[in-house]
Structure formats: C-alpha cells, structure tokens
Image 1 (cartoon, rainbow, N blue to C red):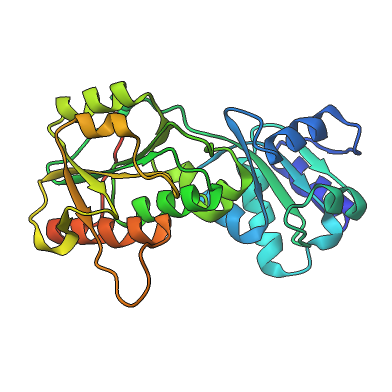
Image 2 (image 1 turned 45 degrees about the vertical axis):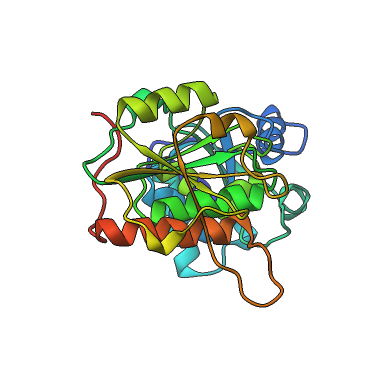
Length: 287
C-alpha cells in the first residue's frame, strides 16, 4: 500500500492523515502508552489485536500506519475499518519509525491508541448467577492479562485488581488479555471497597489457596461467586483472610506443588461457570 492510498482512504471518510516522525508529540504519547505509563490509554499493535479491538468497539483516539507494511487484502480491509472508527488523526509513519516503536518486533504495520472504558464498581451489574475474579497483588503482567482473558471467556461480570503490581495498561497485560481489557469490565479498587461491593451484591468469597482448604470440584458454588487469586509467590494478602470465605485448592500429582496463577484461575473459573451453565453473557454494565 502507498501513502497516497492511506490519505485517500482517510479523506473519503472525512478523516485527516498526516506524515509524522519520531519527534512528533503524537509519537511521544504513543511511546508513553507503549510503556504502560498512561492511566487511560493503551497501545494495540498488529492486525489480529486490532481486529479484537474493533470487535470490542474500542474508542480509537489515534491510528498509526506504516503503508509499506500493509500487503494483504485482509490488512487493507482492517485498515479501512480502523480508519472509520478512529476519532483523531491517522498518522503515517515510515518503516524505520515503526520498527523503533514496535514491541515485540513485528511487521504488521498498524498500531492504535485506544482509550480504556471508564468503569467503577458501581457501574458493574451482576446477574442472578455470576462470577467476579479478584486479582490480589499479582506481579506478572502476563498472568494478569491471561486471567482477564479467562474471566471474559468464562462469562465473568468483571475482573477487579487490588494491591496491584502489574497494571491494566501494561503492554504485556494488553497482549496477554487479547484485548479483553477493552471488552470486559476491568478495574482497580481498594480491598475495602471491593469487599463492600461484594457484600452489597451478596457474593460468596472463594480463595484460590494452594496451602489447603476444600478440593475445588467437591463443593457447590454460590449463585454469585467471587474468586480471589493471589500473588504468584506469596499468595493472597493476609487482610483478605479476615473476611468470611472458603479456601479451595487444586490437587497436585507427582512432584508438582503449585500451578501458574493464570492456569489455576482458569481451572477454578470454569468449574464455577460449569455449575451456572454456559449461556452467552449479557451486558455487564449499567445502561
């Protein structure tokens, strides 16, 4: 694809396409987002992830395109849809600039700057049978993203982060979630506020606890269940244990004594969801 093709496409949709370089303020903003330093903007890179962002109806603030890297009809079609959904400028960048920005290194030629939905606990609307995943003190952005992706796949109404050491806007979180950070209610909140909200909506608390409790598959979960997954090394924060809860664990075979936090959360979330049924989830947000 040529620069002129991108400019013509943007013009036909009433958008503005401009050539920019590394010193442009828009690039500085993108680099900040690509390092996870912006509180409400995330960088979404590549054709596949941007297709996910479109499905999530993400608010695209700015689109960065390297025309020389758009080779296929599928790429051109995606670009057309991205341009149509972009609120601000379409920024045309060179291959050199793209490769200086790209992380991990790719040649897909498109990066979008998306704004995260503004979500609070009070805007989440639980259903009669529902699941919330609480991520307590997780350090790995990959685990955080994996659990957010699992939460959406298992039909949870929200993923809530507390004592967070890996934030929602971290690029690894975004990639590992496959953009579920844009389609599932995901928020950060204080433990006290989370507990207050869970009690108000009559959620029962279940702790993923490798040290013991009840075998996860031997219990009947409450219609509204909140699963707390703790830090990869230290587990769930001690303050959580002052609340009424039930600890559940996954039996281990052989010499293995623990599972990756994302794997454990997936097993437990799907066990809870299996007891609710697998009907497609409705909207989780208040109108």
